[in-house]
Image (cartoon, rainbow, N blue to C red; front, side, top):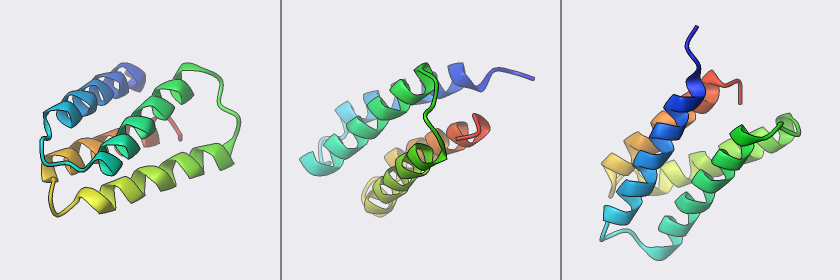
Length: 91
């Protein structure tokens, strides 16, 4: 079985780059996604506390996806891939 973590790290880097390139993204959405990426990176880098923390993080990620769907389909797709990678990690 392949290790999903490097894949997640690659996707998170792609998300960070896409956030920088998205000129028409409002500051609140950009900050929300940056914070989510940072939190995900921290979570996979250390021992996880528990399912409640994981669910909270996924809830925030899903909210970010919903707010982006119409205006930023590329970012939405990347965030969706992050969610899939987290699922592969059991989060």
